[in-house]
Image (cartoon, rainbow, N blue to C red; front, side):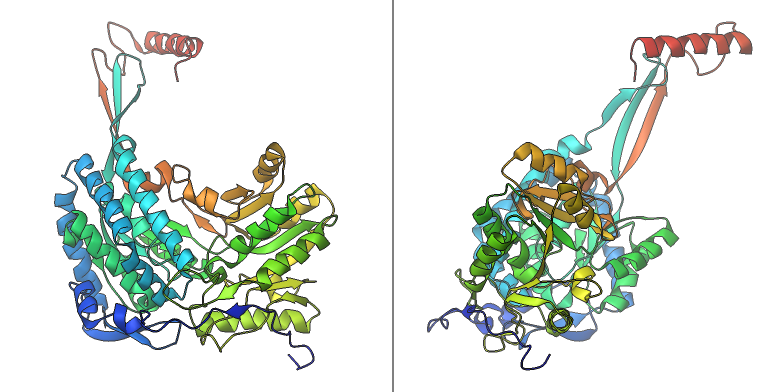
Length: 537
């Protein structure tokens, strides 16, 4: 980008410096805390994590070898056989105690989440909310989800059928860096209450949060060996997880997700994948412009856009586009960037150099090819090494990378449409299908448009939180955005094996009572007609 093309700073300013006496990384991540959290984490090597706020080292950590992973699975498998015999209500009670502990001690984990991810504190609190909701839901509903269920048998009265749910065994979980509490322990909770053990590989840069959650779950009553954590490079540790697990849960990129799926398929074990997205928000012609603009700020820039379900494409009806863009830009330019371990910042940092490079490349390439920066567009090293202003681009077209590739940063592109059909077609014109958003003052219209969008979740007059927070309902991706679902019945039953037990009584499923084969066939044909007439299922 030449000097003449470089966007000016938009007025997005950092908060005032943290007051004297404010908590620092050294105050939070003490040697004593690291020793406590990494107790039991096997690793003959050493690695380190860093804080995005400054780029400085946060913690020295053990690094697991393939042999360490194998031993972790062995310990988990031994513990799981005992844990599975604990009545489900007792297992669920541990989740409810964990719920209370998370809320009571949230200040501890909020500091860790911020230091490890660079998030603003309010965005870190979204993880606390999500984990508490999941713990409460499965703590209350797991006994009902898992209880034996009776079904109509092959021959009513004569055949008694019961569906049982057994734990799969040891779940291998590969968790990402962007939501280190919710996408680690939040996904593990239903696996535990279903009677499984878990061997988890969190991202090394954000593992302290996951280890804190493990410590709290043990305090809540989970046996320590049931929850194993291994640390190390993804290409080394990840395949070992897939190699030993009875089921694999993965959240990350589509490219890596395909590799995980292939490894699981080779072993004929189940897998759930939440992968990439290029999520769209549709602002219809009857939308409340002010509410839509405020919603767009949350939908596009929460966690600096490093949220799988955040919005990167914004389609606005041409009749209101200019007014909407003006109000959206004004709100974006007023956002406060900050790195204090306190509430007040509207956005934090990107997680590291790789994310900063992608965001910068997408913005610079778009500008060079004719896109206009409406707000943001520049890095802010004056605040921290990986800060980048929340950015709005207009005039984005293919083949600009930002048009089709997932940015995973605080960048959104504006597009205009004329008809509702056009908006739906544009929103669906991507290989991804994770999340979308529709804004309108007509609820029935919004729900009708939502039903036409090929995404696993759709939010009407919200960006992402209403669907994600509704934990009784399934959440996941269509198309290249993944397989399987978290939350609701699907979020726990995927961690189980279904077993059908059918007991035949009085008469066999074969000729009897003096019937020959032909008379038996006639009898069964008449019976089938009667069962249809009486609406047996």
